[in-house]
Structures are given as C-alpha cells and as structure tokens.
Length: 162
Image 1 (cartoon, rainbow, N blue to C red):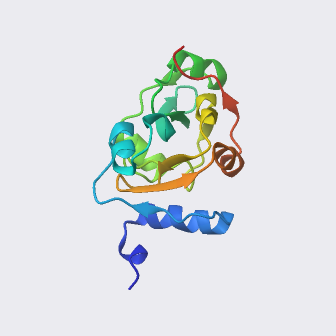
Image 2: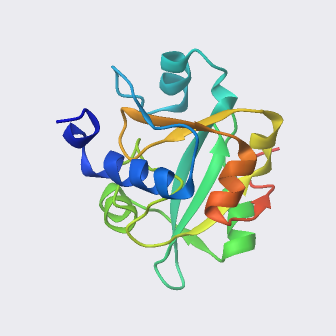
C-alpha cells in the first residue's frame, strides 16, 4: 500500500486533482500539522508570505462559500472581499468542512466538495514559488501564483489590509 493511499480523503482528493491538472509536484505530507501560515512556513523553511492561506467566508445572500487565497503574511480585508462578492458572514468550522470537504487548517485552493466563489490575493505574485494546503493540516503542495490562477480560474484582486 502506498503512503498516499494511507492518507486522509482530503489529501488524496487534492493529489488526484493535481495529477489530473498535470501539476509537476505531488503534495507533501509534513511530520507536523501546520494549521497556521507561520507553522507551515517554519515546517517548509520558507517565508510566511509564500504560504497561500485559504480563508473561507459565507456569502449572506445565498450561503455560498467565498474562498480567499491570500499571502500568509497579509490579513484579509473582509470589506474589500465583500465589495467584490457581496456581503459576507462568518463561516464556522462545520460550514467550512461541509462546503469545502476540508478541515480548517487544511483547506486547499482546489478539489472542493462544492465550488466556492474564489479570489486570489495579488500579494502572492511577489513570489516565484508558493505553497498551499493539500486537504489536511499536514498536507501542502508547491506551485506558482500563475499555476494557482490557472487551476482555480479565480480573479486576482486587492483583498488584503493595506
């Protein structure tokens, strides 16, 4: 049995999606859970800004998930996001798990249970290489900001606190 088949379903779903996209890098399983951008950066030995963190909101008008993929060293500005997507509300852990299929701390930018409205923080483009969650707090994968944009089809926007 390969290591991947022993991993949680979310991690396997992301690995499969990356294979289908022809992505050059398989997801990596970390020895420690990286639930925050800082923990992930420390585990990978990279700058915290290179972490493509996933922040999920709940759109008030239709309860649809709004996913913001932001640079780990930036804080998402809810009012900027809401100006693009519509008024936002809080997304609790159960909502996040139900709509994405992932636990908080492991929300990947792709392979969701239901497709969210997605925005990409333009600050990620400061880096040639970024890392995103791979469906579990222990899972991550390497990509470029351009890959992220291509894989998600999401617009790049100014969505962080100035």
